[in-house]
Length: 400
Image (cartoon, rainbow, N blue to C red):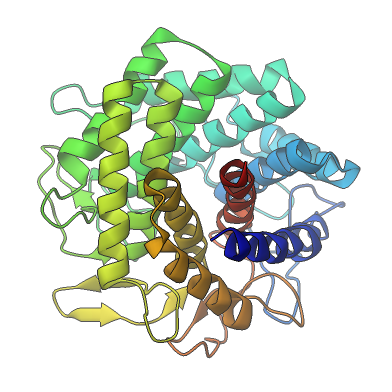
């Protein structure tokens, strides 16, 4: 096990430092602020593409964390560049909160208040404050937290409503994208609120925030994770009635370790034990149903009609962390094979060794699905950079 982990550590650290992070540093838009919003696989940059707040926040988190790990000047500059653009272009100084989308110059073109988006703002601003001790970023994160609790929290059944107008009024269509169901409550928004609240609590030990964090952990255990299948339910009515039978393997494994992280941050011993037990059960179910035992890697999703065998970049990244988390909890080497085989699949098929970064999607056997941009509002360094950083830290901790 030690030999396997050391070999993986060397390869993953090299990928992070010599491919992922330099790729994104180079995409800073020095003329208009932020980062370019659309880049093809062969690096054709659309300099007039829209810029999404989710992408900008994820970049802000990534380079704040990267500077904490490596202390390189270019990582600080990239984090500061993203932070400056978030404050200038995405912050709503009239109604508070974060806009969804701006044009390439930074003018708002979609002013909706998506709680999913707000969650990434909290996550990134908390990280920026943690690393650079910037008081304004902490105040902004706390402001966003208070807005979520004021407008989105639904007290009758618990949890959070997904979306609002620019001035925080209800909306009929709450979808993040056309691929989603129009549901008032979603797993995805709650998952990223979970990580956001955990990160905020690291730097702001507020008792009400801790209670809300514990409530989110409990919501996942009692409402979102199916106790029979250990899959996440994805879309809900206000009363937490499930609206879909879709299984998202990437979200399953991502939740497994984020749930443990949140319980550790909240320092609740009972929730910590429950979270760890559930995380292992989720990891086992993902290996059983979602992991490709022939080619390696993680399938995209399944539903009542069957399974999608395509493999997007981000579930592969989350699989790396989820397997490491299960390995840390149990010490069982059964997680080494899916961990190493998934990394091998990433290295051979997902990483673009010619132009850099990771392809968005490949077929089961690794053939690249063309014409999907390498950079767009959802395609970012958050999943793969974070997976690399998590693996390095967890590997070092285990080897001690």
